[in-house]
Image (cartoon, rainbow, N blue to C red; front, side, top):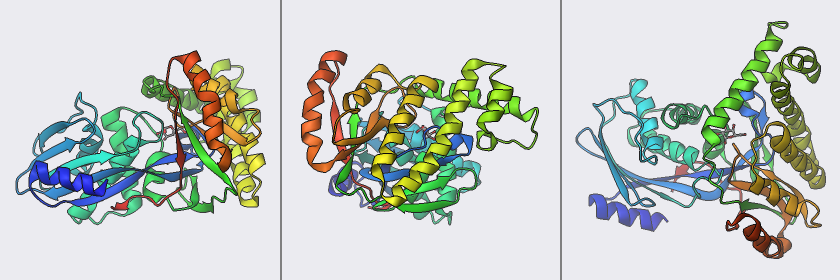
Length: 382
Ligand code: GLA
C-alpha cells in the first residue's frame, strides 16, 4: 500500500510525498455510550487509510482518491463547504477546523488510499479524518497534540458529514495500541490500555454488506432521545448532566411515566455502561466466556431496545449464537448495517464462515464477507 500510494502520488503530482496512515477500529463492548459520557472499549485494527501529502507554493488543495479515481480541487482562501461527492468531506472538514482555529496553512497535494472497507462500521471516516489531521499537523508543524487532533477530527465529522458522533472512533484510530483495547472514559477522556489476550480466540468481523445509509439521521435521533431523557431527570435532579449520572431507578421514576420509547432508549444506555465495566473486569480476569455472554446481551439491547440493528445483522448474530466455538457476537458501531464482531476460536473460523455464508446469501440476497482483525497501533507515519 505504501508503495502504491507513493507511485500514484508521483504520477499525479510528479513529486515525492510524506505518507501517514490511520487505522479502522473495532469496539469490544460499550455501544452508543460515548456521547452519553459513558465508557467504551475500542481497539485499532490492521486496516488503514493512507494519506500521501506534500506542500504547494500556492493556496490550492489538490485531492485525489485512488478508490474513487476522482479529484477535487479547492482554494484555501474560499469558504470550504461539504461537497456532493462525499469522499473529500472528511479531508475538507479537517482543513476547515484548522482554518477556524486560526492556523495559516499553505496549499497541498494529497492522495488518499486504503483498505478499510467503506460503510462497514469500521470507522473508515474517522480514519480519514485522523490521518489528515495528523498529516497536516506534521507537514505544517502546527504543534497540536494527539487529543487536540482527535477533537478536531470529531468536529470535522459533525460539520462536514452531518453526524453528531461521539469521540470513540477518532480516539481509537489515533490512540490505538498493538495488542490492547482502550478503556476510555468519554467524560474525563482518561483512558487505560487493557491487554487483549484472547487465548486462541480471534476477533472475526462478519460484514453484512448492508451499507448503513439510515445511520446518520437515526444516529442523530438517538442522541436527541437520550438528551430528552436526561432533561426529564434533570428537572428533578439539577446536578445530572448526562445518562452517565442517571440510575435505572431515576429512569423508572421520571422517564417511564413520560414516554415508553425514550425510557427504553435510556435504559439500554444505562445498562450498557454497567455491562461495559463488568466486561472490562472479565477481560482483565481472562474470563472471555463471561465477556462473550455480555456481547450477546448488548446485541439484544441494540436490536430490541435501542433499535439500531437491521434484519441482516440480527441474522448474523443468531446464526452463531449457539455455535460451540463462538463466545460472543453483536452488531458493532452506529448500526443499520456494517459488521458484527464475533469472538471465535481461531481454528474454527473457516468452517464457521463456510457454514453460514450460503444461508446468509439465500435469505438476504447479499454476499457475506469477513475479516480477521488484528489489533495494531494508532495513527502515525506509514
Ligand atoms: C458511531 C459513532 C461513535 C459511536 C458509535 C456507537 O461509530 O461515530 O461515536 O457513538 O457509533 O457506539
